[in-house]
Length: 67
Image (cartoon, rainbow, N blue to C red):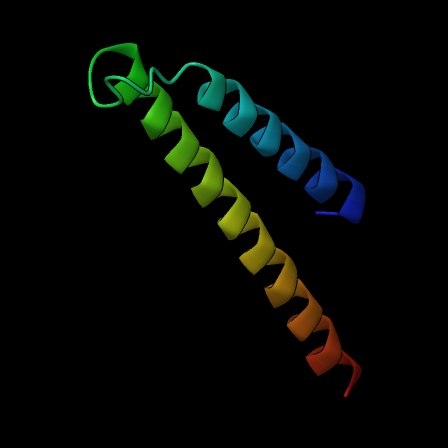
């Protein structure tokens, strides 16, 4: 996976996070569509963390292959 694809996937995850944040009803955050939006936010955050871990592991692998 190259850097451009990684950047695009992170940007898409951030866009989904922002979109889901706009759907939350802060008066009742655990009811109806707000709960679905919270799940979407946590899924987006998880995707971002996984992509960053993948990027870090590729950098480590590249350094190990150079030695």
